[in-house]
Length: 255
Image (cartoon, rainbow, N blue to C red; front, side, top):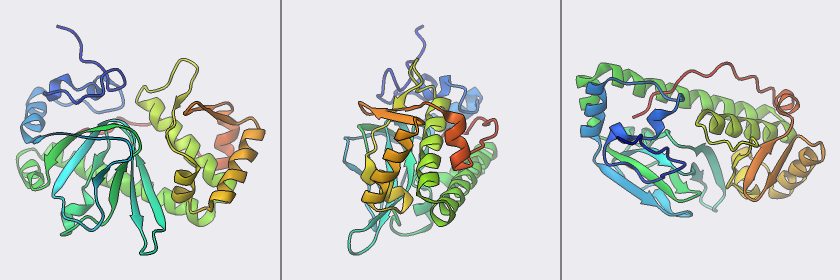
């Protein structure tokens, strides 16, 4: 029997969870056969969104949870005049939509940066999960706490870091997350489909300020972005600028 392909090689969601390419990586915690069968039974289907499309529309009811299987997406909120704050970038394995479980409508939107494929779960299935599989319920709680920690880091970045530190932090954070997923090329580069407007909206900077900051870091020889790929040339120096000292990452639960 052939081993399941990774999402990078086969971005289409498999029909069964046991064929999940994400679970082949060391980035995610292992689950037993019974728990995997439960997750498979809980899943209600799959969903694809093309690049630029919307998965969750702001202020509209949705009632579903998603696990991003392949692709890049981002979560955001907008003001009445159209100004947008990107809350976080979503990568394979991320659980999406948990916040709206506690409201009638989605308080944020989710758009696809690249072609994306998602596993779909009914939001009302959470109660069943917590009741029947407490360990998986703890995993969901852990994921919620992890996301809250990321929000804290983002608040620190936008509130106290200067523009150079903000950009350095974002580049380091995304590169490390992608490396953990095994999505680096032999030369150390990773897919980087976001543009300077996305970076500006994520870091609370103007587009002009973002452009100047990116050029400054580029001139220092700390990174390069070419052909839609990011390569960190001097991770130690870039990490010092960002004060990004990530400890050894632990495997992350995967729903």
